[in-house]
Length: 95
Image (cartoon, rainbow, N blue to C red; front, side, top):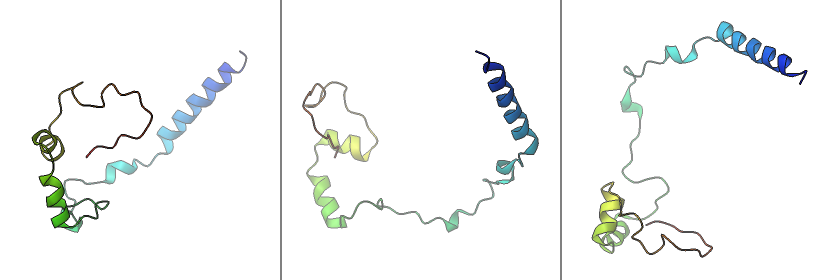
């Protein structure tokens, strides 16, 4: 109980020091003027090692609902898939 005032004083001291000695590091970042030509945008995520042919084959095996969810940012109906009430131990991986 006796240490609460000490903790509060240290916390306030820390906050005051942060306000006094911070250099506003984020205020110097100009996001509007950032040159996006330096950014390398890739079509396929770095973790995907499938060739375009393998990718096309995998996509062709998807159902219409899976394509909508995986490729078009759709959502599946809640509580309607085969795993929604599963109690088995394991790792569930999406498509």
